[in-house]
Length: 211
Image (spheres, rainbow, N blue to C red):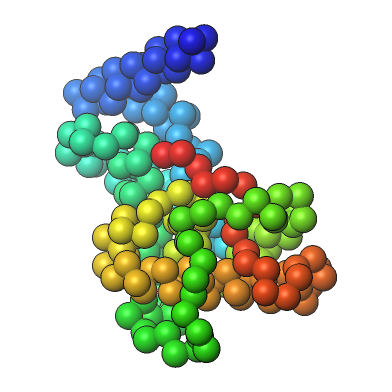
């Protein structure tokens, strides 16, 4: 009960801040920035693997927010809407850079047998076996296409249908990209840390964030 009592005022406060910011209240927008800047920067950093780019993209995301906050209709949580906006900013940046990305439409012919893993399940076996720094380094080594899907699903907690909508791909391709990302992470960690047992799947070192 106490958690519910403390959570409600915070939600109401954010709702009020959004409404004020939509009316042009700069102090309310500044408060929203302080409330969400760390999470947005973290998302940008995980998706790019570059601190300077992450800082620039986080700033760009909030500039976009300033321009588009009037279009927020409350059909989803404000944080979800903001993170989608930030994801789109990063994706546009990656496309403009012309980075060699794994196509989300490529046919996965590398698997000898169907993947039987339930991708929506968080794997508890990695708890305590991979430290955060090692995993962050491993994620940065992923090709941008793999990294994006891994971050969205295993770190940010998006469902595959949501990722498919954001990335403009099929649900099957999203699952395939996630599987390949986990295998690449497993191989990198095994080679660099000696932490992974053969065949052990890789997920984030923490449960997906509740958006």
